[in-house]
Image: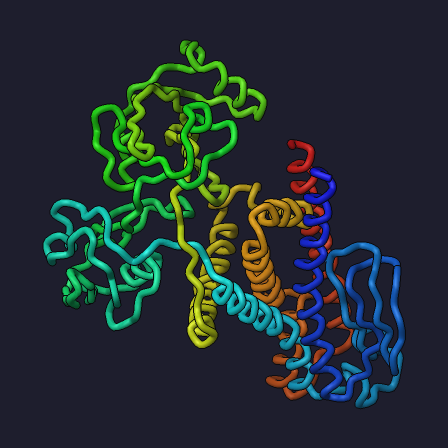
Length: 480
């Protein structure tokens, strides 16, 4: 059962994610075509041979063998088909160009609608975040100069109500020159105008950019909530509820102090020269996760009224970018113990969730365009390319963390599909939209022969791209 249940969860999640994204995309085409009186011959989920279906009215509804993609087959949709018949008002190419534009436009639009609805559900279910309480304040920072102190509860930022600390970072990131913070301190509301400074930092794409900062972070208590299996913390004997008091002789006040202290202390020995940590070593070897460096530090822990002080062996991990950057650095490491702090769940009312969903759609769309830009510029490695296998692996990973991550992944995948299909490329919805726009501008259509040639060429290129992406998918699978 231990192996069957995860497999069933993955299969259900895979079908749900692909099914939802494809179904709503095709539903957009279907509804608009029906609205304009176009005859829809087939509505298919999946590709390849039919495994189940039924016919209602003029449309055959069916599930196909391969659970990737789908299609709506409209009468007179293909140029070669339209070329050999007398077109009527029930044919796709018998419609005026603005109607054909709307039919093709509606598919990707439904992907945006799906993502919007899913994000509303996600915010109503709740996301893990930190309380909007100020923790460490950097000495000499704009926040300290303005009078912000540890323990201040941030109520609003530039007039916008703050629920969780991630919203504070977002407000800082979007601020121009200053940020007005209202905080609750000793029961009273105080207002501070904080200057926003910038500093050079590496973003998720490996670019050195100017990042806004004011010098504050969340108040995260150094109390252990979760412990990774076969981690240094597990072999040390840490338990949920333990409070980290010291690392060596350095006092730990906030959670951020733990990793700052570890990463500032670079005293270490090569793993091949250190022989006092057999349990950790064996666990890492089983996971084929041999570290480049290890070091030993003294950890002081408060457990109830008891103080525990003993050494802990910590391996270094290569600092890996969330995205596969082409020129990723090989000499950046981070020391990890294998512990996580407590994060409360923040849920939102329906009206608030609508606003949060709209913001999330905007931010995610901008991020997706940035990813495409980096791909076209050659700044992202080939590992960034992937098809169904990579998507399946990502679904498997998100399934392990519950319903909300699966919903978020579905929404992001839906946005990807919507954006890609708006690209003005033959064989995609954007290509059909371009044909319609050209016809509106020229006041006459391109010849069916020209459109047929363009679409066949575009389709061939698309197939070649799918094969290219699938090649890296297979390599990724073989490398496991």
